[in-house]
Amino acid sequence: MVFLMSGETNLAQLLRTMQPALQPGTYVFCTVASLAEVDLAEVICLFKEQEGLTVILPQATADRLRLPYSFVAAWITLTVHSALEAVGLTAAFAQALAHADVSCNVVAAYYHDHIFVAAHDATKAMHILQELAQTAA
Image (tube, rainbow, N blue to C red):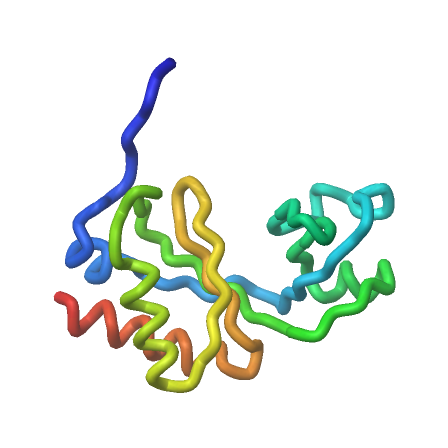
């Protein structure tokens, strides 16, 4: 078995170089019993929970499929390649966003961290994240 260590682990470096990028569009979290009606090419994220499958989809896809949702989000990607074993990055940006009363839902993927914030908070969240990166420099 080969274990590859990749990505940055130094918190100060992660914060300085996180370079948040706002993805176009709006996204929603839905739950489905099966993926029979969902095109996996349109799924941003899929997570299997005990209660069912959670999918993050473009809002337009959920609307087309008539899937219910309660939270419309903007998607921000931290473009720094963060290591999955890195400590403190999520806590640092979550705390900065929380101080500004911005809720965040985080998905850690292999290369990047992805933050989903309320769509109406997107500009505010981007400003906070950029400021966090500048103050860490």
